[in-house]
Image (tube, rainbow, N blue to C red):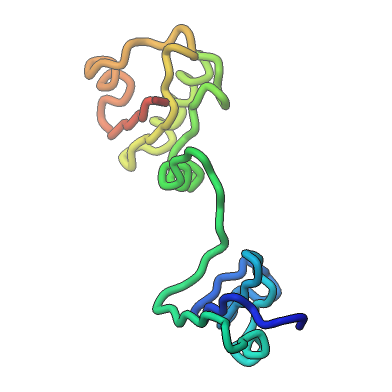
Length: 147
């Protein structure tokens, strides 16, 4: 260790390292994490001027994302919702095939699809109650618009 850390955080540290998924403390110097480990392993980084914060919670890795919808992405990537966004299905015929296939496959559990976009997927029908009822007359059908 070169010099004491500026900041030591003590609490539940989620590392996202498969070898050591959690830790008890971390030390920060000049805005960079310089140590992660048990309280004992990080203790040598504490000096007279080190700010020590005890957390009643956890520290997660930081993610910088300028614009996103993480909850919707988690739902979409969870396997229950079929991704029909133009980026994955630019052709309207493929979208219609996916809808009819999902309705048939899911039955009473209902079909859930995300990414309907008639502006980018030319040829899609207008989503009306009559169209939805015809596409899935006896089961739930949810189609989330891409916007």
